[in-house]
Image (tube, rainbow, N blue to C red; front, side):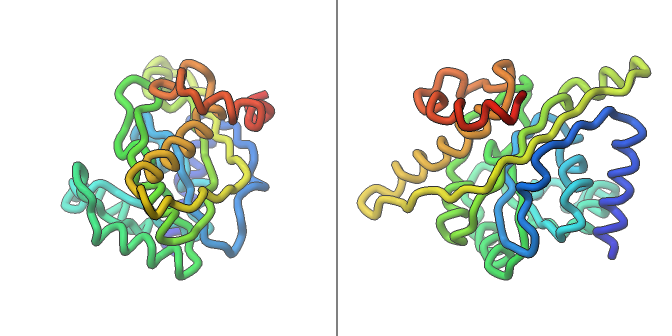
Amino acid sequence: MRARILSGIFKILYAILARLEVSGVENIPVNKAYIIATNHMSYLDPPLLYSLLGQYNIAGFVADKYRKNLILGTIVRIADPVFVRRGSVDRQALNAAVQILQSGQPFGMAPEGTRSKNSSLNRGKSGIALLAELSKAPIVLAAITGTDKAVRELLRLRRPRLTIQFAPLFNLPALDAHDRSKSLRRNADEVMCRLAAMLPESYRGFYADHPRLGEFLPQYSSLRE
């Protein structure tokens, strides 16, 4: 109940303060475990995503530094977070995420591991690939634009244009038992290249010239039209 109320509050705030365009909601599974993977440029991204997915009882990773934050910590605890330590493989957080997915609950994460400081994609961490491998859950991509400029627009008394697009779910290929490290890297880059293909060129960052980007541009180009 508290999660639905929080989701509803976020939804009202975004409807009032922004010009929000949402597409691909038909690609969000119902009553099914999946990983939501999104780009992350602003503090506004998580509540935006939660305003649309909170009704599905979605959980997600939250940086451990917010655990003791009086205001933010109180808010994120309503959203069923898994606190994660940055900078190393947090096995406890990873196992918790796997258990949530295996129980049938969706789980959200930003594969980059932190906010981008330049409004474009950083190289994704291998955690997204490892979580998908351990949980066997499919992935739904959520491509967000506009949040990087939203605060500046609001300070100018303008309602920023925000977009979020959801793509059809997909499964990553199995890991190579003889070289797990290399195949984890391959799968993480696949997620990020798919995400880059959904975004405008200026947002693609590290993946703008990635050799695999071209594989996915035809598949996702229609989502950007």
